[in-house]
Amino acid sequence: MRLFYEWGTKQVHKHGEELCGDNIAISRQPDMVTLALSDGLGSGVKANILATLTTQIAIRMLQDNLPLGEVVQTLSETLPVCAIRKVAYSTFAIAQFHSEGYARVVEFDSPHAIVLRRRKVQPVSYDERTIDGKTIFETVLNLQDGDWVVFVSDGVLNAGIGGAYPLGWGWELTAGFLEKHAHRELSAEELADKVAEAVSELYLDQPGDDVSIVIIKVRHKKLATVFTGPPAKRNVETELVHRLVSRVGKLVVCGGTTAKIVASHLGQPLEVDLSTITADVPPIARLKGVDLVTEGILTLTQVRDSLREGADRRTVQYRNDGAASLLRILLDVDHTHFIVGQAVNPAHQNPDLPHQLGIRMTVVREIAAELRLRGKEVTYEAI
Image (tube, rainbow, N blue to C red; front, side, top):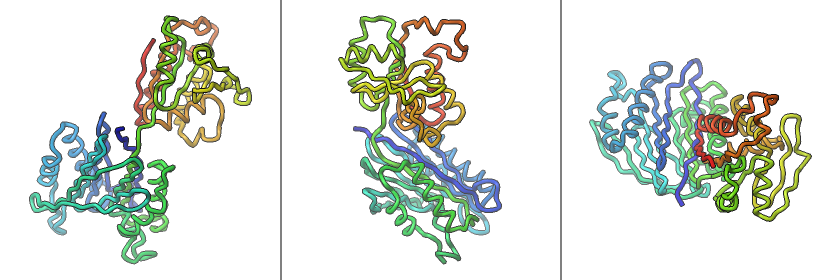
């Protein structure tokens, strides 16, 4: 089964500066994710511009399917060298993560990647080569479900200089911290937050350097299927329910009529849970073989509105109504497929109903747009 790469990033700019002198660029394609992390010389606006230039050149060239070696050659020849310090104006780490389970990593003057398996740091063997007078480190990582790959800028390794750690936190101590905290149940974003909190404490909340953290959690893709609305043709119901329950991942049914169709074809009772009813959202129901059963258009509309208002996992963490339950699933999985029935529901054509209820497919498309803004994959079909 192909691997999926979950990303978490965190940046903190140097104390007294308005911009971070590092830049992170991430591009997701169907079978590959590309990362570029650059640390601009110094800090502030100039460093930010140089770092951004570096990541954008790298990402653009890789999106054009140019070989990684050619990208490195171009960056090496393009990046100027400081006449006074005799060092490059920006450093970089570039990585391409392939769904087949391997990653190619190229680093120039940046901290080596930290790779963890079962919360133990793994040794990484690098090849060295010189391009235009610059030493480039290259490696290929063979990855497994449950692995973590971490990239940091110098600002992380320098944390604590002159204080808790006279020479700074360093690579070894950073790796040791990750071994203690890279629990499987954490998201990549949560682990990035933990590292950033530790770094801030070492800097006494006044960072002496720009800080960038990129966490990659290697796992299998999380999937969900949402079936909402009865199909336009009743003779496809049996086939449709069979297709629904045979899909991998979370299964959700939205809509009273839709739920009755699924329950009937599964031969299972549909039990309404009145404890989950709220003033805005009808109650959810229980159906064996389905992870979540909610009311239809009202619940979907509430989900759309919540996403537009910036809802995230934390905002719905402790709610048990239908909209919050559906939101948790949509925000937790990587790919959601909507199956949208096209049978006309006479209730939704009532002119006395609020205009914002709209048509079911319209609301689904709007939910899809919001989820894609959050980096989620969404597909849908009309039946």
